Image 1 (tube, one colour):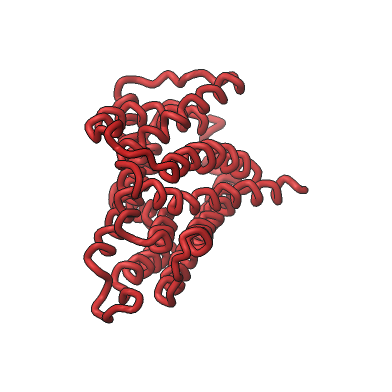
Image 2 (cartoon, helix red, strand yellow):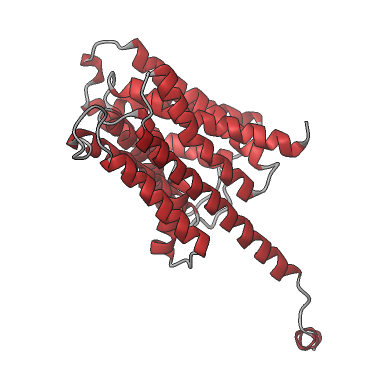
Length: 320
């Protein structure tokens, strides 16, 4: 298998794993409190990341005090905030809806960059954000199955809002990562996020008094799966694949998140995928494709500008 095909395969598996997290979260949400489940997730993943760092002989990055605070905020948003809000949302909405909303991450991240960093979006990105917004609205206000056509129930709407805020937390993580000045490898970042996430979620988890809860085997199995497959294995697969293909190609493969979430929800949770959900998924997939195209065009423009011959006057000025 060629390196490019291997890259596609690894990234696809990683994104299928991410899509499966909504089903795992559904199993967890009804058996464990959100902070307890989050702390358990990182308690399993963190030692494994530390072990992988030792095996690959990677050291802890040396960051300054300001970057330490930045890393804490990153973990609070992208690790703890995302997981806790996703678990709360999964108590109230369907796994299919949550998967569609989670698939809007590339468009949401682009929108956050425009608002917070004043980046100038390309026309494809603008259309992508509009499509992603349409997909979320279709999930949020569609008529409930077998019910009146007055819109989704308040409970489902609240669950969808929680999932959307979780996606915003993940987009904030991506934005904050651009502010780091010290080079941090993906493995170092994953290890730091897991360790800090464990520390941040531990006290809230103890406040939930998990020792008073009855044992729920499905919930604990869901936490173990979440920690081992999408978190640790997903990290290894994604970055092994992304190293073999272009960034735009890798980002396009995030389209597998809503598709795999819907497939897992139908197969494992026996959820029915309605017409409105198919339409929402089409909007999100279109948004992901447009973001990937815009990224590819931006990359080609950057390469073209860097390889273009410099004006003769500039060359003479450099020589003098």
